[in-house]
Length: 566
Image (cartoon, rainbow, N blue to C red; front, side, top):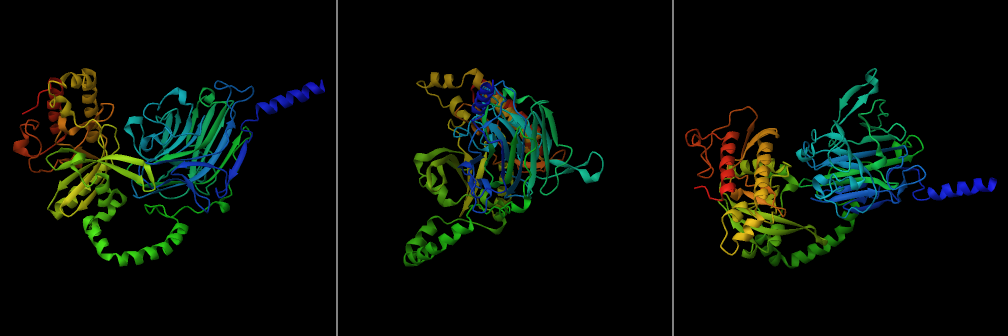
């Protein structure tokens, strides 16, 4: 009998051998055995930096060994998930006070390989094909700083509980209950992108299946009342052996997402407390290039040598400087990293070669370009469309850039995203995301006899209906879901661009104007395309959302009949 007991205990030990660590504490990550990828790094003083400010990048920090989340006997899914508790301290540094590029997610996942995932709204956890699939087996708590209509976000500053996707089971604006304010605590709002360190607690009870998420400023004791409390059985979500860690990503706005400390307990009560005195200091405000002091000190001697070489070759350098000269004024500083260098755009388009020309519109030529996201990584590229717009009014271009950058901060899947701009001499260069299938009118009208059947197959009735729906959703977002009403003023087939899946994206905001909700739109000169303008617009010159609705009706006829409006 004693031998049987010994064998039974030995068997149980083997069953728990995978992921045998049930408690850990990181008061900073200097020297920690942590798996990081993509843009994620650990600074010399121990800060886990998930994103370093580089556009359209993602980063992960993962505990290196999988943990055993199921009670014996283990099973792939369906077994009882053990109770677990974790806490971490984070800080988000944004280039703007009121805007940021997505947030941070704590996750439990069956893998630590996120190669196939996407940045931007997919948080580095999913892609366009697997988001929302039950086969993901991913549990996450998101600290989201972007309002994404596609996934039903409540605002641009919230905490949510997610299962296998980005649509939260439950969410609440970032806040905490102040226990010092009386019984039950008083709810106090928090701003995730304030640049201040904050602490999160995630507690799951495997017996009652109750999940609690609590938020508070750093050094404030854990509030008695959680921000989120939700009953959810994770037995069919979390696999027997799973990885734990953090994910973050950037879109077209620069931010840095940092973790200062982390602890976790699996089936062993509350997560161990963090020692605040040992936590590293948060990084300083993002400078756009992510260089540390150590790197600068190493670069300075090299820079001196380079400076001598530059002086020797001053004439050649001067010629190159004239070639890539840009126009920059003080008022542009507020747009910061959203401005691209002319040199990068010049090389991306091979000197704006005719072979890269995508088309010519009313405002100028459009070129295809390939930007290097990281100078040292030739494989990290981004396809863009660069529009060259002529301008000759200093006051006018300042107003135009301000409006175009405001619109560029919008995030919606049915709008062509504006990534940034550049100014050079009498030119304004706008950088958009690239749409492989070009504009819709090319499929409707530019069809010779040889390509007629191919065009009809590419644009069958189901695709036409979906494109109409895409444009409708984009217009609805512009008219109803922004702080200010945005009137497009030039809705037509040539301003609808198609991605690789033939989904429609509304573009060409060159004529767009903004005004407050319920306010009278200011009078402007008559702009737009003849055939799409409302009859009264010629008399009043006042564009409203109804102006877009009229043009949208003409657009529907255009797509349905395949006949150009004249």
